[in-house]
Image 1 (cartoon, rainbow over the protein chains, first blue to last red):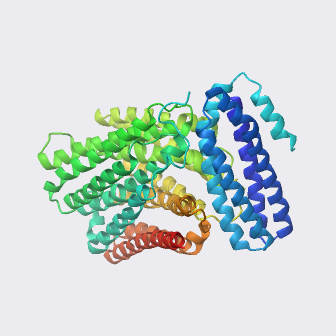
Image 2: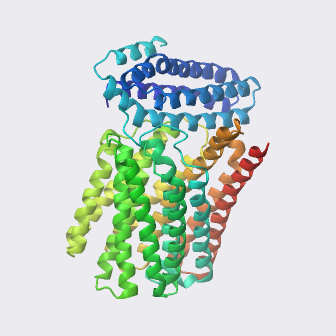
Image 3: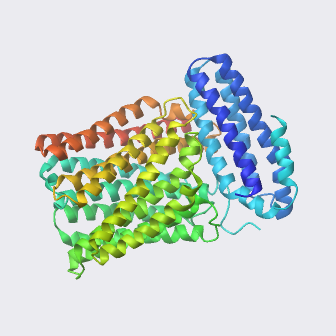
Length: 147
Length: 420
């Protein structure tokens, strides 16, 4: 696996772990724990989106000349995921376990089919166009800054 | 530059009706298989009775292959970036050909009306050829660096070989083509279940299990070499079957069984490490499926050294009903509500969440009936009691009607949400 693909895929998996912690706590009705895990998950997601939207995608667009292509679609899916996160936050605020479980399941599928597209298609394309540049180092710095 | 035909878009995803037509007709074939068992319990006397051949193909072609084709129309753009050209009309043609073809095949085999095998051969062969050609056209410029898209290509080749062998069998029965029937039959089963369905299941699992069940990744050697290795051993095995080299054939069958068990055990191990502690119906269905595969493969190996009629039947029940049907059903319960949600979000801007579109309770009840049907089938095959076989047939019919009803309920919720 090449540098960008590997780095970004690892970050997806790391977000998944926090997602599962929030899901488990909410299912057990441990609302404080669920809120803390959820807020960490939402922050990790936002950090990942931001690294893509403000660094990876612009570099990819500059290298390929494609601004209306895959990156535009990925940005659109980020918008969908941000609104799913907002609905999950509402469900947590209302301590509605069923609603949280449903919204969380929906986000999981939405997020994973998005990740599949990125990991199988977009990131390998980024590696082939941006390999040898300092993009991977910049991404690594941003993704690990939150730790 | 971005290769032509490669895109990442919801817009590139097919219309809801494209996969849905496959998902709606498939359970009806499963119910027909159960009803046949209910009406003619004597068909379980041996795997070679016309009724057993009909039931097997209602399940494999009518249910399994139909769902797999529908799912591939949907997932090839997502996991491989392959856009199947004109997927709407192509899906309609492929679906019609496969549906009528599967009916002709089951009727031709079950009633020994071999005249029906000719249209079945043409329709199933033609339908699959159109799909494979369209899929390869979509995949032609997609790099093969990732395991899932590469292994999906191998599965497409496996299905093509299986259908070609099936067509040869159809022509042998209907037109008296001079072929060694048992040899071709064995090759047909090996390529259909392992080269096609098995490799496709593995290709899907490489992404589905770690991503949706939040487990570690499969071990890299498995994702890198399993499908290629299995394909290579299958080719060698085919040579020993064709050459009627008994000992070498058994050794290679055992090697294939070890590969399959390695995949099933690895999947079960990963699922035990899942970070999701919330009970998930798809995970349960996968666990039942993998356990059944392991038991079924043991029966296949025992059947090699035993003349008892029950072993191949038990193997068939465990691999097809316990293995493939379980995992396919588990995946359908994720795919259908998600597609309903996705199309609602695209069309009207908002959608009820997935659990409102497809609640857990009816899925749990359906999987309960499915597991009972599996237990009844196994008992019936062992005991050979006609009433037990009828009970198993009734349970199989009920489970597929349940599945059909659950999918229709999701569509009802989809329509209601669309109208508001």
